[in-house]
Length: 370
Image 1: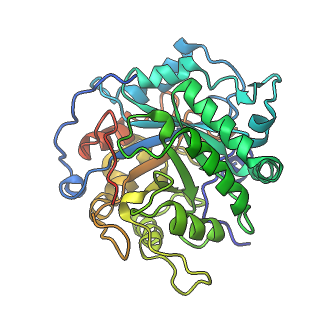
Image 2: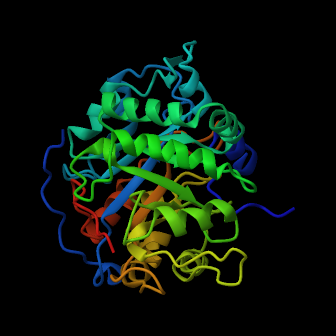
């Protein structure tokens, strides 16, 4: 069976596969060979699944939350390990319907509250909410068929209320509802126009695509051609999601190169994507063993790909070298089984050390546009 190249961002799928910002001092100069030259990452973030495999169905005790997640705001010297956290996931149909039940309040998981958002933003870490995930693909389809404009308006209102951005994670592998998704984006942008400065957190609107160009093909083609063009951007950037297991450095680079090059032989063709318009993604919690991506930066794939990602050249779109940055799947407990990033497996030595080696800016600056 062919395994999709998308990010397995749901508790069910993952379990099956793996059984107001305070300015923070600039990071120290890079010291590792792979981090020494090139364009430093501007986005260096982690998806976050709370302690219940991505449902966020419980209001967190903030003392416990800090104990389990302190590494995200302190790499060991008081500086955050990341400059972005994406809380995952909001069910799009639940949001559209404004559902209130044991795990949701007015369509939003009860754990995704202002206290959690403020925990990160008070340390200069930007926060976004991810709508979707592979478990909620069918609910995306239903919501887009019912009222995509209202869904976009509700997502925009949620972003305003919490002071966050929104990520679109719509993993429909064939025949996605592009018309509905366009209506969702139009409604969101009517409330929060594109903001190249990044000053308005709620104006940050991104999308997830596959690790390479061979899955989520229709969505990838349309997003690259219509929403991610440097000349007329609609979305801020895309995340090239993790594949079904941690790639080697060479495989990760090959996947990401597909986005840079595009697929001119496809019909319709997937055009090239500017390096400044997407991030590459890696696992920090996968399987039964702690990964070096979490705890040992010198041995990690982010270290192994660091030179490539900072120097990747445009191949038909954009003008500047270097991917926008890295995303990591996923903080705390992304699956009901397998490793977590909770102590003693926290990721200061992997993600945090990478933030130092790559001179990651915290808070996140205005992003490169081409």
